[in-house]
Every structure is written in structure tokens, then in C-alpha cells.
Length: 70
Image (cartoon, rainbow, N blue to C red):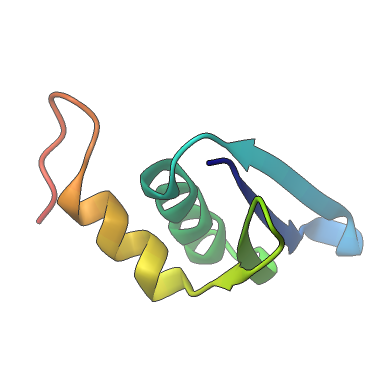
């Protein structure tokens, strides 16, 4: 299933990224929010919104090889 991560960057420029897994989408959404991107959202392929907490939890449970989550 694919996931779409959206938000608004500097100058309210709309940002939109496609990720293959919820883990990847959760990581990206977390980094976007940490770096000041406004109104960050994750949606699944059917358009259902997934909470940032669910996305981050998925990343923590399945980080990329070689990564350590603290």
C-alpha cells in the first residue's frame, strides 16, 4: 500500500511526497514536522488519514536496516 505525506513549506508552498510503507511515511512526516513544515498529514492509498503517531509507531517498529531508534 502506498502513503502520501503532505504539508505546507516556506511561503505556504504545498509539499506532497509518496512513500511505499507507513514506516517511511511516518519517518518523513516526523522530520517534516520537526523542521517547521505546517499542517503535516499522512493518507493511505484510499485517502484515509493516518495519524502522525501511527506513522511514527510504524517507523519505530520497522526502521530501515542499520538504523537504531531511541
